[in-house]
Image 1: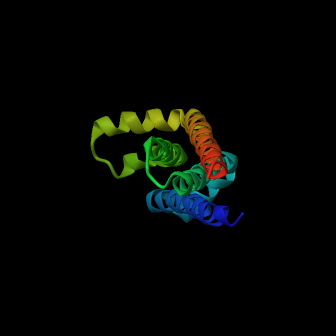
Image 2: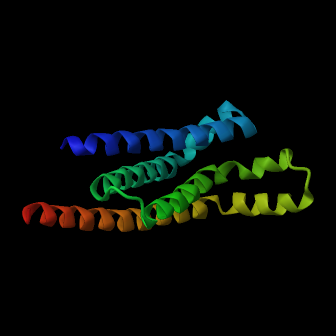
Length: 152
């Protein structure tokens, strides 16, 4: 069971860092009160994305412990993490129009604001897909290592 302490700690740290990024970006763009308001309105999406990302990190760290080398799973986690972060901050992107003088950016920001709930669902879907992939790889590697140990 001690082998899961490091992955759990790293996963918790990843979740907290993602939440900190969410609050930092919203606070910088629109202020603390707005950040709290958005979190209270969308907390279930934000926490699901942060938890999913933390679980991905925990599984990846455990997979690295088992295999002792890096692989494609890290790339999947990075893509999913970026998607999760993007979905979490989508609720504030329409306020970026205040600081972006480029007219073309206004259309992109308005589009993201209009579909923020859908973007949350996309982030959750990417999280689940990544969790299934990394979880399967971790399980396969753990079984393989157990068989290798049993044959020694």
